[in-house]
Image 1 (cartoon, rainbow, N blue to C red):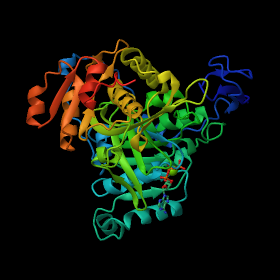
Image 2: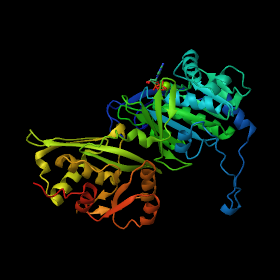
Image 3: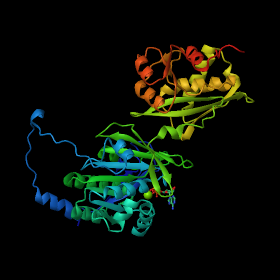
Image 4: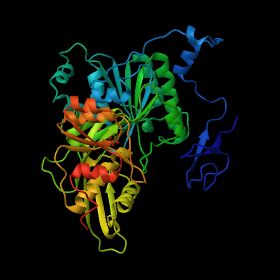
Length: 481
Ligand SMILES: Nc1ncnc2c1ncn2[C@@H]1O[C@H](COP(=O)(O)OP(=O)(O)OP(=O)(O)O)[C@@H](O)[C@H]1O
Ligand SMILES: [Mg+2]
């Protein structure tokens, strides 16, 4: 009889070797190799699902065809019941697609998917597989969520004919596949992929081999029976999706659910999407009765109406969605040998660069001052279009000035102090006008004078940072020392 062989698999890159190493020869990570025993040849159990599929469809020789002759089928998207989730997915769930949802522990992944599953169950058949929690635990959460929603409560009580959500609490991949095969649901939720376990593999649940094998088996069945699969994935300490990189290649979309543990709002982003734009943003709020969509997120990121020194308003663009956000700066004399620079929501390097530009081109002695910067609402603003707003907040705090109310600042700062154009300026101005802003400082040459006039927005164009700050503040910040 053949002997069972063991291999060592790196848990961070998936590389295999016959021998144990303290450090993975492929990716260099320490203590990441785990022994895995493959069953002896000939003892592998045949999966009923796979076997049935192979038996039903013998492989046929396929020939290529001219691309114009290939039949077109419009994408039929399933509405998830949440406009914010649909937006991030690019318009809805695509049948037969795999979507991986990652996020920190306790952020609300199960809540989001259970609520969407419940909403989708009104029109489609839905299977919710809970591999992490018992059926009772899921039922309790579901009860808490549906009791607050009258429509959902009708479905829950069985009054509505379309009560279509099935619940399965199971960790064995084989049984999950069998249930998927038997029910052929339009949508299935797997919570989570790391908790599933393929009994044929020797390694523990959550290991690279298990995650890869389970995801591949689920992908095969999803494509074959046009089931849209939503998988929950864990994240590592560093915030990356746990498991092999191959998992991210295998799925059609990767979404991340993030948020400040202390704030109630949660942000949903697409990191990868084969059926829509990435870097779209969905905003939710965690309430006692579950997650609620935030349809007007700009209001979340705007501070109080009281103008204060050191506050500036910018319009950041997340994907195609403009967000009006408040920034606050505090500049105070330093008592350290080297001044402190702390930024929340904006990269510290970016802040250093803007401070250097202000010091050089406006002659402000900022190297003798500590500088703290914060973005309201815990939002992360990565794009350089926020530069002018940061500069204005810093200068306003330094000079103890208040920006005229109703002013937004949009523009990227070059190292030479020049103001560079930004993308999607039109949408940004529209959003600012919608929220009642009346003045916008933007880079010169925008060509949007007519649009601004129709929006009743005063457009102040500037070529450089000094000119822009004079326009915004009404005084010359470079004079006064
Ligand atoms: N009874 C409750 N009332 C209000 N909020 C609750 C209640 N129970 C849970 N929550 C909220 O839901 C969050 C947990 O959500 P959920 O279980 O969906 O997270 P998760 O991302 O699936 O976590 P995990 O990674 O552990 O599976 C909690 O952090 C809490 O904010
Ligand atoms: Mg969960």
